[in-house]
Image 1: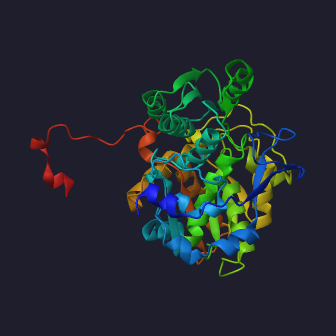
Image 2: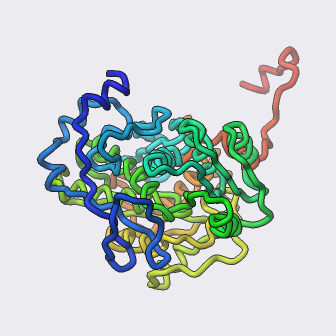
Image 3: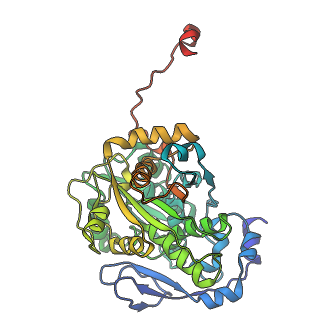
Length: 417
C-alpha cells in the first residue's frame, strides 16, 4: 500500500487528551502550540483505553514499516498526513562477535544510522515539523550539536518551511553541509550548543520563529518514542534486559521509557519486565552521571564541555530530571566513559560487525565493557545498544592513521599475507 493510500485507509481518530507538565503535572490543552511550563518540558498524554479498543498489535503488523505505523500512539491530529522522508523502521541487528568481545551472549544494535538523515534525529524532527505545519508555523529554528540541525533542515525543506540552524563552529563539516544544502540559514557560533540555544531563545520575538530545541516543544519526544515501540515489536512484544543509550539531551531515553509505560498500560507486553536504562556520556561532558552518582534529581551544568562525540556535548539538558527519573525507575544507571578511548572503541565496533557506529555509540561500548566487568550487566542479559547515527557523519572525529596504498601495482603481497 503506497503512503497516501495508507493514510486514506487508516481510521483517523485523535487519541491525544491533553499535555502535561513534567515538573508538576499541570494539565494543558493540546489543540494549540505549547512550549514549556515553568521552564520545563511537557508530556503528550493519550486516551489509552480508546487506543486499546481501536487497535491491536496484529493490526500494526499489517501496516507499512515506518514509524507512522504507531499512529494511535502519536500526536498526529485527525486528517493530518505527516511530513515524511520514509523514516523507520530501523533494524535491530545481532552483534555476536562484538558481544563476545565484551563478555555478552546476547548483544543487539538498533541501527538508527539507516534513517533518512543518517541519524535518529529524523524521528523527532519529522514529528516536530509535522505538528508545526499543523499549527500554521512557517519558520523554525534550532540549536544543534550537529545531527538535529541536518534533520530539521531536511524536514523543513520537505514541508516547504523556513529553517534557521545555529551550531557550534566546530560542528562536523558534514552536518554543516547538509543544513546549507537543504536550504536552511545556517550559522556557526563561537561557543557550545547552550550558546546556540540562547540565540534561538532571544531571537524568537524578533524573528517569529518556533523554537525546536530538544524538549522545548512536546513532539520531538513522541517521534523519538517510536524507537521503543519498534524495539518492543521487533522482539515480539517483549523488552530487553538492558538498553544502553548515548545521552546528550536525552530525548530518546525519555521517549523509550514513556513508550514502554504506555505499552504496559495497554497490555501489549508479554512480560511485566522492564529494561534497565543506562545513560552514557563522555567524561568530557558528564552532567547526568555526576548527578546520578550524587543522588540528585537535577544536573548542574558541565563546565568546559568537550568530546569528539558531538551529540554528547550537551552541558545542560532541560529534561535532566526526566532522564534521571527514568534511569532510577528502571533500576538502571548513568556512566561516564573515558573520552580518550572513544575513537578506538568506534574502530573496534565497526570492524567487528560492519555496522556504521558513531562515536556516541562507541561510548556505549565502553560503558557496556565497564558494566559487565563490575557485574551490573550479566553475560546472559539481552542488551540493546542504540547506534544513533552513521560513522560517516563524523569524519573529523576519526583521524586516518592507517596507511593507504596509493600505487596498487607495487603491492608486496607477501607482506600483506
